Image 1 (cartoon, rainbow, N blue to C red):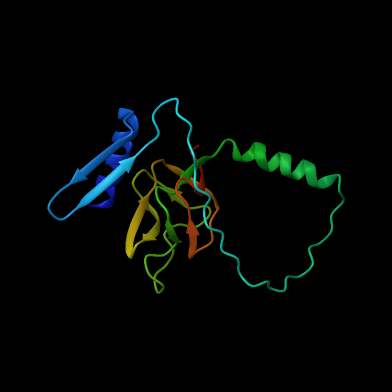
Image 2 (cartoon, rainbow, N blue to C red):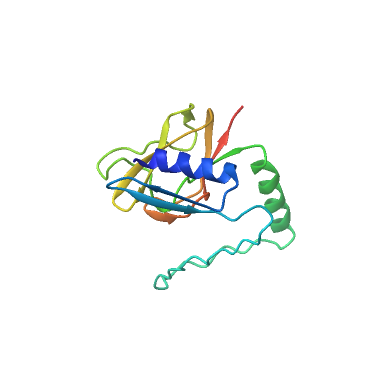
Length: 159
């Protein structure tokens, strides 16, 4: 069973509104548990990894009045974009291997089914395809960093 089959099984279980499904073959076993409709959902807090402090140049001070308007403009601009999200937990890579070029850059056109990145989970490198067509506006994750399920990876302008 590959990762796409597992993802499809998870989607099916969530739509079927059952609390638990066990799937077992002679060399594979998976159990999927979901909260039933109306029941309280408890989420585990993800582990937080801290890195050693690094010396950073002091930020340039801007007038206090200018900062809120810039943030408000950024939020309103982002609303017209479509987000490509991570379908799994793992490590985000922009390249297929260290000696190759990146899949996409800001400004590149993507089409439905084009590979935009790779997420490594448990020594498996899963190619992530775009589900929309448009232009990459922003890359939201740094290369070689951990990502969570449903974490935004890219902003795409579908126009």
